Length: 137
Image (tube, rainbow, N blue to C red; front, side):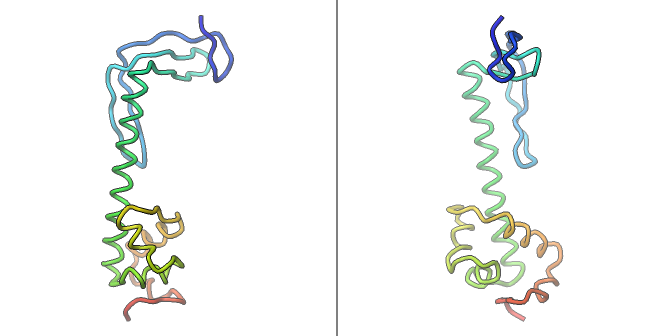
């Protein structure tokens, strides 16, 4: 039996034809007919090259979908609040072009920016509570 690179036990067993689910940001992608090795001691999975490539591609697609969803949400929320990109940048402490880059998917906002926007999406009336508000009345 092969040795597991994760736990060091000689407990790797071959598997084939399995279906597994890749998860990212609340989204899932089912990948069928995977094969490789699984550790009987720690459950670590080592895919064969083809399975690894297909599983990674499914995960990469989920990451791209999550980025696109975030990009669209940022634009939708900013517009809902009646803010220009410059006003939204000033409100969140970003540079003058930060929201343009976020909305184009060229930059990822800090979690604090995302969390603030999600809060304001649910409670837009709180925009008036922010001290350095750069938006419309």
